[in-house]
Picture (cartoon, rainbow, N blue to C red):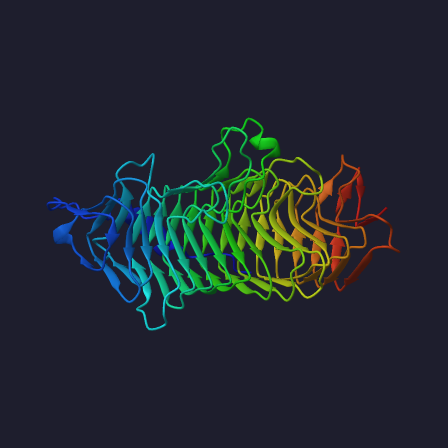
Length: 466
């Protein structure tokens, strides 16, 4: 089974961006007062010092060429009703920033435009120090918000040190897009009020979008309420990236060292009629109170298909608050429908310290050629509960502190798989397969598989039925 993921170009991008803007002496600055803007901003006029809210009118275009620095002198916003293209180059990026990083700027809002308008395009651009703190998801926008555009391209861009109470970096609605070779680093979903408890979407939020996300790095982002002394125990901040009712092809994406107070330190997929595929993606060393590095939550949603190919979950963590909910890696829920399906192929789960995979309600999850190993789970590698169905084909679950849990009308089908050397001789509730409610209320079928040398309270335990 292959689990190696190649992310060299993304990592090189981040190293490059740390020193990418032109080191040449800047020209005499150009002052941009509040009002309409269009035409071309080039290096000769850089830096462009924005002194108020500015607008690209419908039917017009603003082009920003390589080496340009656009510096907002206060909490101002760039609104685009026409089109905008920021065209940096590999050795000379476009920089969007604020004169005061503490107060920031309000970002770029691109509104629905005509199909006759040019594409919305950002290449080799860095967007930093955006700050939108309205504490309400309908009014927060992020440093780049694009609405209802069918020609969006974001290439070789870095979103860093942006802050928002709900959205901090990139938000898009009803767009067709490509995001490629980009980094989202050290952004914050932040509720800074003393009684605040709900912040999130620090990196990417997409609603009803179709497109591709290739070769991105999402690292060291936070979703939290640091001024609330109870944030770590009762805060509900979370969701570094969210995708609602989208169809997206993800490839070569790395989610590493992200934090959320409650859950979803990496990404959540929800909504209706989505077709999402993740290939060669890595989720590593992410942490939240209840885990859910990748959350597939379909409460009343229908007709979703999520496929994972050749992915890796490694060392994700959670602090155990409620026994039922702490799940480090993959959380799959379908409350009201059996039409939502998850297929996981050639994926490795390792070094988890709580539950690794949780499938519940009416969710159906099929795992092909997957491996769970070296998980010191307080709960289980896999849990199937409340009418969920888990299918394992050609899988290996070995050398973990616990194996599989099936309960509350959960279902498990195992084909051509190995479940061995799991459990703990000093713990009653450790086993290869632990079934609660008894065999009459739990559907377990095992075909052509080996369940061997699993231990529970000093006994070799192949299958424990309670």
